[in-house]
Amino acid sequence: MKTAIYLVTIIFMVFVFCTKTERKNPFDSGGDNWNPPILTPVNDTIVLQDTIAIITVTAVDANPDGSIVLYYWDIGSNGWDDSTITNKYSFTKSAGDIQNITWGARDNDGVLQTDSFILEFEASFSFHSLITN
Image (tube, rainbow, N blue to C red; front, top):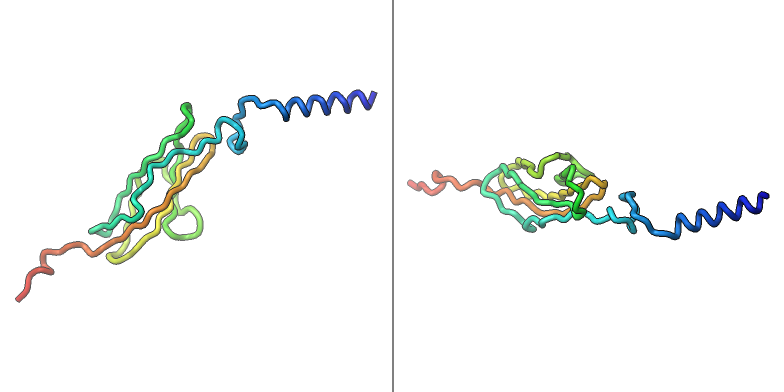
């Protein structure tokens, strides 16, 4: 009797693990929901004439029934510094600063895709700097 139970259990496990059905587990790379979000890359370097930048990024979910639920922002420290539900982020730095930015978009299946770019904050143009005595 024990042998029959073990045999049925093994046959059941082989059937379950060897047949591919639609998978809803986002961490299963063979499943249908493993497509990462599609990001529109930001220019590698953005030179600004001001010390404030509002960056808008674009991301769409690769799954037709999915959506982007969070955007993540890393402004140079270890790990994500902030997350937003909108695709805009404001950066404020001093003139002459250079900031490495990594951003990511997470979809409703929990899959994250990232991209990075550099912000260069140049000194603002000032009319007064052209006046000479």
